[in-house]
Amino acid sequence: MFSDATDSALFEREGAVGTIILNRPKALNALNDDMLTKILPKVVEWNASPDVQTIVMKGAGGKAFCAGGDVVSVRNKGMEGQAPKDVASFFKDEYHLNHLLATATTPQVSILNGFTMGGGVGLSVHGKYRVATTNTMFAMPETTIGFFPDVGGSHFLPQLQGSFGMYLALTGARLKGKDVMKAGIATHFVSSENMEALEAGLKGIQSSSDVQGVLDSACEGGADDASFTPHLDLINSCFARGSVEEVLEALESEGSEWALKHAATLRRVSPFALKVTHEMLTKSATHSLDIKECLRMEYRAAMRVMEDGEFYEGVRALLIDKDQSPAWKHASLPEVPAARVARCFEPLDPATEGPELDFD
Image (cartoon, rainbow, N blue to C red; front, side, top):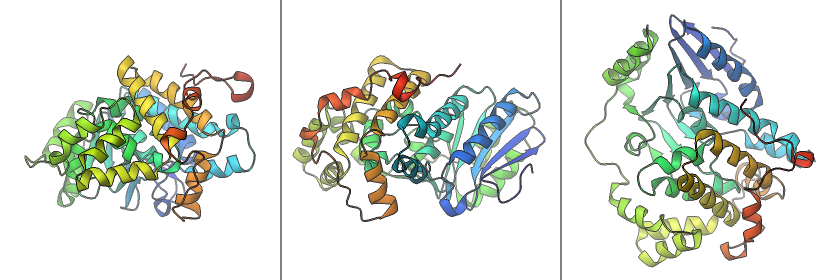
């Protein structure tokens, strides 16, 4: 053990395995600046070391892998009057870590036990192995706080089957347990009773070539359908539309209980965030953007979303005051100016917004 129990991130080395423990259990291991400054150099170090054959990442406390980024802290900085380029340090470090995990040569195994949302998705989904458990609760719910699915979401979501990624991105729908693997997000599933065997097997890994076998022996797939299987045709039909307005119209025209439930969700979350999200995933899919290009696109959008307070209002309503009644700047989809959405994808002004995201 390389750190004491008060640290936000703990690091262990056992033989050829390096383990990262996200250690803010009272905050559901929400990712903050302190965690980023600790985890980034450790991943660089272990990825470069021939003695480390596998990196395991898991959350402390049993309730969450990582429930997201510490957006309340980011909001507080913005409300204190700091310029977007000064608040941007969190996103810059987070996206650098996402890129590092996506390009690392040392295989990463993430144990998605409990809540895995937002920033927690970015810590795990880019690695080679993602293990869902009986307790996994996966979601990208950023549109509910006036933001968009970032941390590389624009890269991995369009790669899911059909229009499933667009469905998850716009609605923030949650996936539980085995469904996370059935969706193609997790690579393996382990039931609660097999968790101990999985942990023991991972600790005994001697070479990166051992990882697949350890996971396969401890995990189970099962032939049963996912809970979302009955709705796949509807998802692929409704969420493949060319605009959010068309998605909403398709859901309401279909008229089933499932469709109307998701239509109500789209009418409740930020209209601006929905339009940015739809445009972002469409650009990524249309132009086959790689992880660097996606993260740069997301960084631009993050800077622009921070400009006018939509994100701040969403965080206030859902996570601070918890009144669940955000006052969005534009109350409906038709009221969102096209220019405002387009600006999220334009190059940054280095004088007022700082430089573009750079991975060199």
